[in-house]
Amino acid sequence: NSIQDTLIIGKKVIYLPTCHSTNDIAAEIVHAGLFDEGTIVITDNQVKGRGQRGTEWVADPGQNLTFSVILTPGFLPVGDQFLLSQTVALGIRAYAALYVNNAKVKWPNDVHVNGKKVSGVLIENSIQGSRIASSIIGIGANINQAAFANSYATSIGRETGRQFVLSEEFHKLLRCLDHSYADLKSRTLNDRIRKDYLTNLFGYNHAVRFKYQDRVLEGTVSHVTLQGKLVLKLLSESGMLEVGLKEIEWLK
Ligand code: BTN
Image 1 (tube, rainbow, N blue to C red):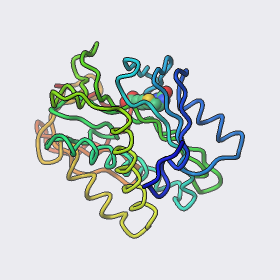
Image 2: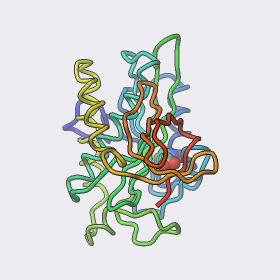
Image 3: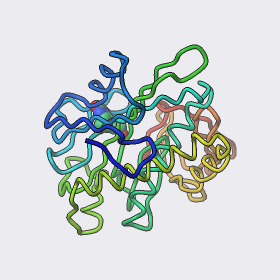
Image 4: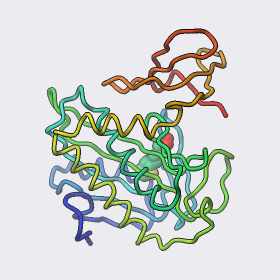
């Protein structure tokens, strides 16, 4: 099983009707050592999906896209790890933008539509020396799911009132990711990737509310550091705040 019209991503697709976590299966493949870059593990029913910050990722079976891509971005120095994250977020955002005109990246790499999350990414890199030897890119993209347990999640289908054929959407999403990854691989477009990321980022040029050290603050995104920290310009008190993944919580 493979996708024909991409350069790397999806050249080999492994389908499992059900599994614990596609990221874990992908890690086993990486450990075994024999795989082609761009190999994908996809499932219809992930029963122990993992999210960022040790959270759980839950999706209705057969309604969404739940998969992991194995990449070998050996050309990327460890210091540029966040570029990979930005590249993936931009690829998923480009896919969502096929259907809606307000798809946003929410730092670090969620994709939101109409202020609600349609996709999450869990990247697990393995570092060798100063390079990224392999990277497992786990993607959960909500496509047809109609109802969600939490009020800040949604699906592309729900936001557009459409019902999609999952295999077609899988193909389209892979093309968008492949395109983004080709930009990263070119090594000449890093500044453009960083700029595109920023201009498509939730909170860039408009005020957002968040919780930091038990305080509710308001601010706009100023920029993202090379290491992937978010720098916010505070509204309430003048000054800048640099935060890492576990340090802030977005508020409505
Ligand atoms: C997040 O937003 O917290 C990240 C969610 C990542 C979920 C995907 S689904 C496919 C892959 N396998 C996992 O166990 N997690 C990722």
